[in-house]
Length: 437
Image (cartoon, rainbow, N blue to C red; front, side, top):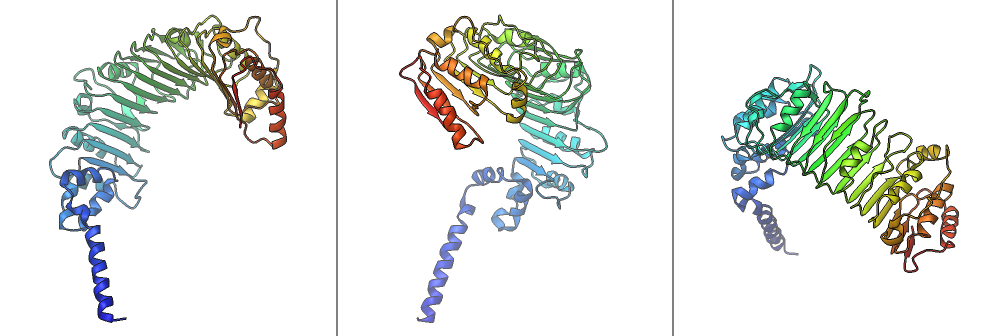
């Protein structure tokens, strides 16, 4: 082969590769800044060595995304230098995940800078061995902030005056430290347009956690602590669409009516009068997920779910089948029923304490007229009560269109035996499609 031809061919190929590799530099600044906003700030700054086109582009990126976990060799002073070196333009988003090596005094300074430059989204996740991080005072009057996420070692002390989050729509509080009850109340009352609130708590200084937000549409509360019968929640959110609570023990509740509520999840609450939680949502909720034991909660049998069409119930709780029968009797419009088991070992022990299943005297109206889909995840027909519940629903649901069972960690012989038991029972709905996975 001619060596000159080989070199020319190699040079042309190299030029084509170079042209393709550099096409990104021909994009407009606005598009390049958008691309740079999608990667960590440490990598954004490193682009300055690519070419003259990129030398100062990073100085205009409207986002700071720093995590000591992604590059542990990088000093926390990187954030300080980045803020000082960048151009005086908007800084719309700031995400700070900082470890104990970061001096706590720097974080309020960084946040104060971001607030002064049009901050719209802030995520603060600090770890400090010297105490909790206090937020700068100017953040409580930030009119541009739309999304706020605070985690762990953050101390929330809302002042008496000049507090207004008029643009805030999403607020996430994960294991933060509130000064007192009044600080909580002032925080939420200063958010006139808040739509989504996620709260995770453990042990803090708050006795009565008050949430009064007329604009709120979604509320999630995960409480890992023990209320001791003295702590409680006061919730007033008349336009709430979604409501979820999890992991509470011995708390008092005061909940106003929720006429707009459509979906609710009540998971792992103990020693609580669930009537105070379920009654305000009973007249409007359409989708309901429950993981409760009638022996561990004070449940009201008379609560009627007049609009409920979808029900999901955990079979991991003691005597779950008794709760199921009550719910079926009190849900006249139910169309979809889903049963699921999340903790097979624990649930097996609980069920054996009282495996007796008693059929209700009257067949629930939803089985006679409405139920169309029945789904059971982790079904175990070797347990007497599960087999009886399954057969009861199949033999009474007259308008059932689909019944779907799935098992896990079972041998083929066991699965075949469970299938035979279900298959030989007459079904009330001749058009029902049966699936056993």
